[in-house]
Amino acid sequence: LMTGVESARDAYIAKPHNCVYECFDAFSSYCNGVCTKNGAKSGYCLILGTYGNGCWCIALPDNVPIRIPGKCHR
Image (cartoon, rainbow, N blue to C red):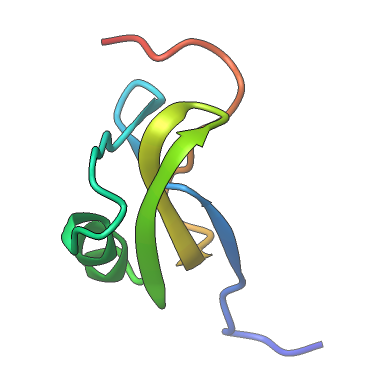
């Protein structure tokens, strides 16, 4: 068992209140910026996904909130 190593997962990054970062252009760099600023390897705009059009991050650290089932409370 390794200590001091954080695990990561691929997921929708969440704003406060369980809302996704909305996006509208699959080729924009917006989501990659949001994801990498939060420690992910990369990110992109997932169109028509489970929670609509939202930023999907690759290898997002476990300490960063992700979109979970339930309502987005704006």
